[in-house]
Each structure stands twice: as structure tokens, then as C-alpha cells.
Figure: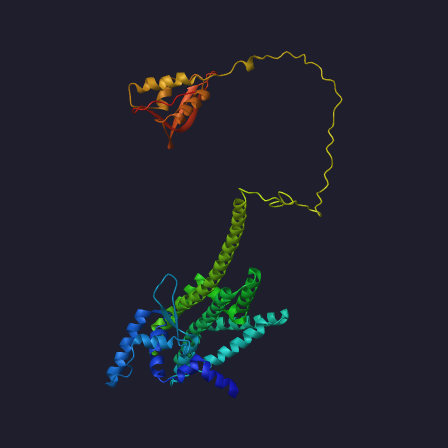
Length: 487
């Protein structure tokens, strides 16, 4: 922190400019009660204007004079300008109304001012134990010697066994009210600090998205070089310590079991008598859902970056296709211009009608040639006497006769099922005749084949055995339509 660096920060850093602004009490108090205190990520313009108008009216009424004469929208435009950078004005997806959110620099300045307030209770025991726990976690997590790690686990196991034995003997050590308050306040500070960290992560991805849009707008080189450059910068952020920590935290938080565990722990802590004496903010009961909402905003920023890259690739593909169509059209226009009067010399020369593909290094695998084996055997005429009656004894089903049965049955009724028809006119050729009935029903415009209901048909074959077949319900209807012709 040398002199020149501090001079630069004083001139350019939004947090320092906010603290040194003429109306800093107005800006900080309004943004604190609008965004920080209720933990609201974004507010629409009309709603924010209404809140600021009410707040300006309240301050002027308390002072009995017009302290801030400008309209509320003028103040919001000033605070969101590049000169100040205390608010971020943007248009969310599928919305025509601008929205506002505080910047990470503004949140830093507000949190620093909050820390200046006199605290009624300052705990040091929990912070000291946190320091020891972090040191132990780092040393144990980086220990390469298996024997040392096993020894440490055995030591921890012995301590746990001693605690269990002590509880069984009726000696239960409890935290007193001071220790409970100390740990609760530290937990609340860490929980609220995580929300500030989300704004910083989102700001980093948003700056990368803005840089990508500017680079795409001015890029004149190839697609590969641009994508390599962009993905390189994105990997720098995601692979950084901050990016890895955020990704691990997000995976941990998205676990349903962890969410349920956090809810149960917070509700149990808020029921403690010592915590109720502090009158804690009830919004802390839903702090993990606020983390999820803030993390989702950061994830949407990354999604917008991917969408921008996809749109760039689609535009480039469209331009390339358009160039190809222009070349084809130029060739067609040139051909039409010389259609009536062909040139004396060659109009266009092509080496070949299609490109020749020469796979010079292609070497197919060896395949042994097929050598047929011919048996040296003399074919002699067979002498066995076999009956050829099976070639002539074929079953023929006359569909015209079956159609006549159906028409005859429909003369006395409006519809008839296949089961009723078979019962009245038994099958003569068994399954072959049944298949023929199904073929007639499939070709008919009035027949119905219902797969949801079944029907069972029975007949006696040539050997006298009873046969049964279960098939979908088939109904033949008359209804002023004729059966399909059978060919």
C-alpha cells in the first residue's frame, strides 16, 4: 500500500469514491436498507424509484426542508453511471424494464461501515477455536505419512471414546450462554459474508462476458483463434483458487441432504434460549436458500457467456453459407450472360467432374483367397419311391364363401362378431380359415378390430382334436356400407 497506489484507488475505486461522496449518507443508508438488510439481489426500476421517492420524502420531512431536490430517477442514473459505479443497471432476460443491483465495491464499503459500529458483544473464543480447527485441517489434509495420519485418527478416536464414557457416567458438558452467543455471531458474520463473495464471483464472470462481446464485435480473424482465446480466459477464472472454491461450495450446497441438515441445524439453534436473548434476524433461518439464489445468478451469467459463443458460431456459419451462395449465383449469372453468344475460346475449364481421392497410405488388410473344395463324386439317380401326394394336397380357403357367410349373417342383424359367426358356421379349414376372416376384417371399412377386448374361438380339426384360439374382438357391421372387395 504505497502512496501512488492509494492515490489511484482514491480516484478510481468505486468504494472509496462512495465513502468520499457528498451525499454518501443518503446513498449508503438507502442501498443498505434496500439491498443489504433484506438481502435482495435485484430490484426493478419502477419499484426502486418508488422506494427512493418515499425515502427522500421521509428525510426532507424530518429536516423540515427539501434536502434532495432532484427526481429519484436522476439519482439512480448518477449512482449507476460509469463515473460512480455504485449500482449496476441492466436488462434481465425476457424483460423490457431495467433492473438494479449493487456492485461488489458498494457492498464492501457498506460492510466496512457496518463493522465500525460499536458491538455489544465481541467473542474471541470461537475465533480462536476456528483458527486451531483450520490449522489442524490443513496439516492433516497435507500429511503424506500414513502412520502419522493413523496416529492422529487413533488419538481422535480415544478422545471420542472418553467423551462417550463421560456422558454414560452422567457428566455432560454444555456450552454456557456466552459461548453460544459467541459462536452464533461468528456464524451469522460468515453466512452474510458468503453472499458478498457471490457478488464478486458474479462480477468476474460478468466482466468476462462483456470482454467476450467486445472482442467478437471487433474480431477479424478465424473462429479457432478467437475461441481459444476466450476459453483460455474462462479457464483462468474457473481453474483459479476462487473458481475451484466456488464450484466445490456449489456442489456441496446443491445436495438435498445438506440443505435439509442446514435447515434442521438452524431451527435447533434458533430455539436456544441464549440465542433468543440476542433477538436474531429471522432471515438467517433461510440463509442457505439465499446462497442458492445468489449462486444461481452467477450460474446464469456463465450460461449467457456460452449462449454468446453459440450465437457467434451460428452467425459465422450463416456468413459462410451466404458466401457460398453468392459464388454459385455469380457462376449462374455469368453463364446466362453468354447463353446467346458463346465465347470463341473455352468458357470454363475443369480438370475433372469430381475430385479424385487418392489414399496413398491406405493398405487394406490381407484376405486369403477363397478356394472352393470340390468333392469328386458321381451323382446317381435315386431309387427310393416317395409319395408326391403332399405336393397336391394343399388347403384352399375361399374368401368369397366367407364373405357370403358374413353378408348372410348381417341380413338379420346390424352387426355380428367373429365368435358368433364361427359358432353359426363352424370352421372347415381351421386356423387358415380363421386367418382369412381376419384378413377380410382388416380390408373392410365397416369391420372393427378391438385390441382392448379378447375373444376365444374353438373348432375341431381333421383329427377330431379340439382347438382354441384367443384373438382381439372382431365385429362386422352393416351400417349402409359394403364389405371390401376380396381379390
